[in-house]
Length: 438
Image (cartoon, rainbow, N blue to C red; front, side, top):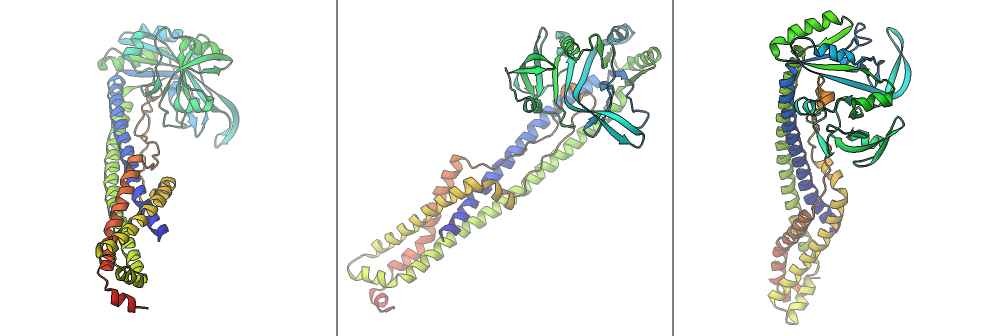
């Protein structure tokens, strides 16, 4: 009976823990969505005038995707070869009429080269371990354009004048085994980690940001970049800037605003739908949870009730003897009430142990978790601003001290309620009838 009561109590502990874990996940989902909308608004505003310029991806003609900014594309976890060009191109483009700002960027992945066979033949691919992104640390650019990730979770972002410092993605801190203020060696040079930003959701790439000049120096490609973000003065001049760039640099690939805006709008609509679905799921989970809590409460009371009824029946003669030697009805009733409370206390302690250890497992068995909706990071300016999307980290049902105390007190109360009738029945037992019963 103690084990049965303990299991019932553990359910009373685990289910509220599961509800709180799902509520925490929902709050995180909502917070991430708010952050996502803020970043999305920034991106929509800037994307309207943004043209992304890079050398044409190696495999674009062959049908492989990939953002032009890297000079290559990703195939699964592999990456096509990267392409770089002289950074003076940025200065030349800046002189084109209608251009407001140009931002030269160096994106260089470090990893191992592997050969893969495709339907187009054998190609050598880079399997990235991490990606270095060098950007100009200029106050005007940093203040007005989404050059660096916005989701800083520890430390700070980069600023003008920074040297010998890096900003790491969360999964990069795990890869290098470092945190904020630690030293990390990148291609033979030591850097100080000044900040960590939320991990990207596409491909879980391990990105690290530093100044453009330092990125060029440690990668051995000084004076070269992989892409340029070109911002037109306004939407009206985007077309003419595009024509001028493609006319001067036929070998470059220019990604314009129209396709980005369509995809951004589509992503925003999808995220709204995902959030609504998550809220609906949470309501359904809570409804089921409350029903299960109700069943557990009733079960706990009934277990105590039938246990004490059985105890009274088995100890009928003992009750008769106690009454015969002068025990009052109140004394008999108090004794059995006390026994019911002791039973509940022991069961409560057993349930606390089971619930504390097994809450995650019990919750998974009895409740459907709030499935995190992994919203895509922006595929357009995302490598710069690192939109967190609607990613929700897995939440574990962990009982709080307050919950354990409440359930323990509730278990004692249920023990009192469940043992009341058997105790009252015992107190009303006739001594003569009790002594005659075998």
